[in-house]
Amino acid sequence: MSLALFAALGLFIAFTFYQYGISNDEEVQHVYGRLLLDFYSSGFADKSAFEYRNLFLYGGFFDLIAALLERILPIWVWDMRHLLSGLFGLAGIVAAYKIARLLGGERAGFFTVLLLSITGAWTGAMFTHTKDVPFATCMTWALYYTMLIAERLPRPPLKLAVKLGIAVGCALGLRIGGVFAVMYLLLVLGLAGLLNVQGILPRLRFWLQSSIALIPAGVVAFILMAIFWPWGVMSPDHPLEAAKSFSHFAFNMLTIMDGHVMNIGEVPRYYLPAYLLVRLPEVFLLGLIGLVLAAAVHWRSWISRHDKTLAWATLLLAALFPILFNVIDKPALYNGIRHFTFVVPPIAVLAGLGLTLAWDTLGGLPKLRYGLSLLCVLLGVWTVVTLARLHPYEYIYYNQLAGDMAEAESEWEGDYWSSSLREASDMLEEEITSKPRHDAQGKIVPYLVAVCAENIQGTAYLDRRFSVTKNWEAADFYLSTTNMGCDNVLNGKIIGEVERMGVKLAIIKDRRDLLAHQRKPRIATKPH
Image (cartoon, rainbow, N blue to C red; front, side, top):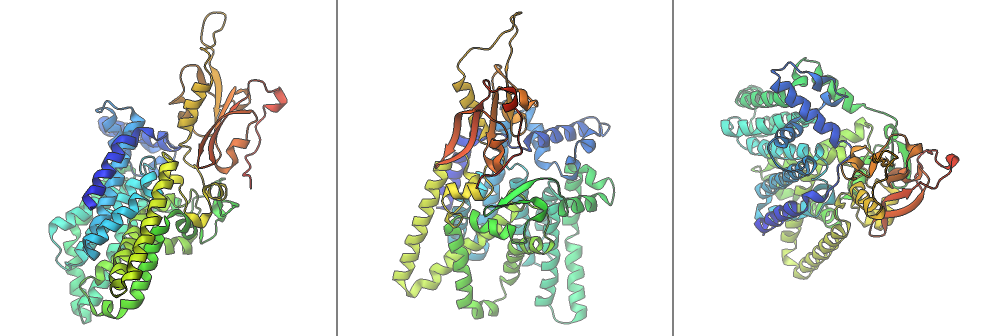
């Protein structure tokens, strides 16, 4: 059944990757990848990549691969990026499956694959979140190899150490947040010495032997980080500078949580837990409840078993530590759980384990067991139907704790990646059926289009009759998502709407008949 799910996911990626719109950050990320490629192809002479905006604070693992594939594959570059990102998402599910199977057997692995497959924050995001999902995938593989190594300390096989180094190096080659994987390893290493060895000197010897055995992992990770994030190794303080920037970054931007609009630097400590609570499907949450109840019933027998203690501790660290860190440190946050997408796979593993443990615990209560099964099936089907109705905007999914979809999109972050502008651009082309305008010399005079997003999110899809402009006051048409009230910035007659489940995701406004005083932009307001 797991293999059937993987096959279905592969087909889903193959048949839908070209349907997703360009995300807000995608152009600058791809430019960064091209500049990194120029850095290497010029023999390290062209250092434009390290002067391009603030992208040097990130690694270019994904973007460098995409820049290379752009020169090889006969696929439109943006669709190619989405296909590549989708494959990373599938690889992340494979890693989560392996972790769940390690701890709970094949059934837990199947449940984990199923849960991630119906989680919009993963399978809906994996095509356009080309930084977040690849990073989460690398972190999940790093978690898997850390768990395997934990069971074999103080002398883990060299092959495992190298694999861990590859996973951690690729994670650091995307974001400095890959240091979380190093922290998990160190904490598990310390815990292994405390659990497996008695006495101060034997423990010190255990830790020393383990550290020596893991040197290959550190070497491989550093080499890969240097390849994909060369700026990060050009000075010892560069990684610290990147970490500081991401921990305390702040700029003038708003986010929304449960109907309350706030600056991203003023979000409450429970912002991330609240978003996780409403973004994960109901059956996902049911699995977590099942895990807690099963732990309450079996905690004595679990404590007496030591064969999987380190693996469980590693998983719990990966799932809970970033959330606790976020609650304590209280960094600026926006876009819901986007920056912490890497906690979704380990939480999915916990939920998958919770479902299978709940099934086993209810072995003596067949009616309750099958009642739980029926509830899970109904909730799962409900989620799948909802995702199908939202396609290709599955990443905006919210569960019923956020209300119906109209309430959720009004009171929580909506189409923050502006993916719906691709469909809006197509609708504008269909709505304006006239041929291109020409001046007296026969030269095409395009309609001016203002886009409440990055210009590329309009120019990539509109034909030659249209030209995206930064002079919004002069714009003939306006394309905007409804997220955070951006659709209210400019006046105009609405001539098209991108809609799913009764929710307006994007609008098209015709401004050609407006008077001069009606053309001025306004401050975006989020309607309530």
